[in-house]
Length: 343
Image (cartoon, rainbow, N blue to C red; front, side, top):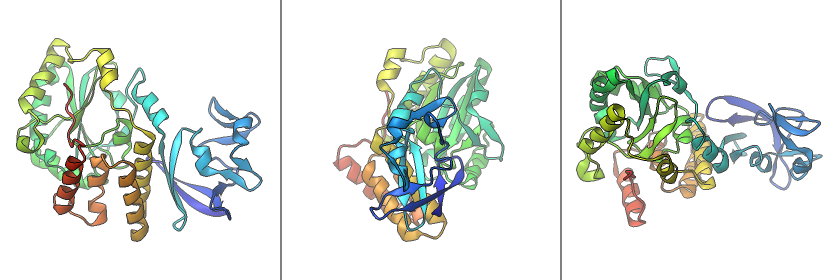
């Protein structure tokens, strides 16, 4: 069997596997596969086990069917046989369960100055997670988000910005220019966009003092710089934020939060795995293969502008150029909104 590279968005691992005559990727079962190991009850990870009778459907003398095993393991998989690489993402069920849990998904991300910060470290304060990117015009809102942070911090509130950039160096200059002091994180592996099902920026998610989502994915701006383009009102988002921080009125009941929570489909999650794999291929000299997998990601989730536009720099394309405006026009023609503000 060959050594394959496995990408899960947080680490890079290896797997002993080979493609059989039928084109099925089979792994040596005498090893951990996606963190699961073979034992008497079946395949187990911690206290969870996939019983042997279920494993019989994807385990033969030639090894474990990796793609078939992924689903009961709570994953989707994108595979490139030529590069001997594969990428995973939580499947739609697993991601939906995490989003609708008692607390928001837990993450630890790098800051623009190199530290690593866990979202749980902000417990005890109201938090607005503000997703942006260096390739988005919303980068010009960083100074205004900083002003909101400074204004409302004495009331037990923090703005926490999360840049959907693959490198800290892409986000850091924009924070320096804006003079920000709020916590500034960078989603270099796409884990935060995945965890919160973010499909475009700017997007805000509000967390209460207990880490619960009280306002799900909401297109929000802090300036009206691009209001003619996005139709979003900075005054409205600022007023709503102040009502929540000062009056504890998030504008939605718990039932409405569940109603408006955007939960990912299996195709959404496959697109994330394909994009993760494509990014690794592009960075490791497999340009043609990367293009194939970027195309598969776009085919699976054409509405995910964050994935598609965020990949443009890796593909040598200008995220502010013709390629982006062609993407925006095609989505508009298909009736797919670029921005999704909540009521």
